[in-house]
Length: 98
Image (cartoon, rainbow, N blue to C red):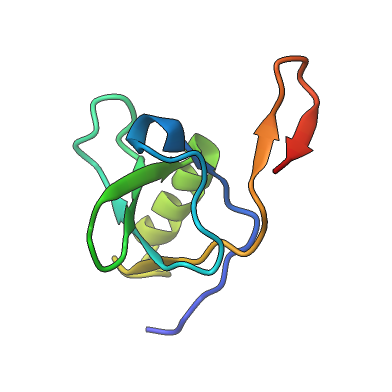
């Protein structure tokens, strides 16, 4: 299977798992969670190699990746490498970076 690079994906829910952002240049694995009771297309982001749950892909990104899986365009291996500083939404709705 060929390697495919998809840019512009967003991670959510880091604060539920003990950190505020994914580390830039660290490696993470994406794992589909078809049994997830909130979203059957959910893709969990786990730290590599510890396998600790860190976050999830946002819903529309997970749906896109799930469709690629369904069409057999990608296999079950998803490597996630953050490249930019995290973006946070302020209470006023504006966007700021750390």
